[in-house]
Length: 131
Image (tube, rainbow, N blue to C red):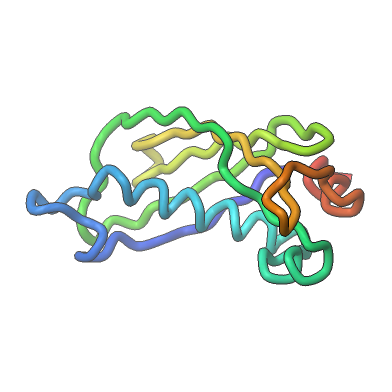
């Protein structure tokens, strides 16, 4: 399953040099992951309320390719690569004017309210697998 969303770079996203502050790429990526879940019919708040579960970042690997700047329009592409019983891997790419500026591979783990690992609820797992 693949999802695209767009975000404008605002002044608050940049450093003193007018480029996106390195940590803010993770915020754009988080928004992309949230929107992918929403597109499958699941919102983070309802996952917690309905299933008593949530997703947390377990591991990530990021590559900074080139800077994005104030007022740029960024496209965040989020793709689910693999889904296991209690975790899944996403690949995310951030583009500016069709040029890759940042890429990220992130593993998300499903946890219960007790913060212990648990199985991904079946209907969410099927949606992530694209079924």
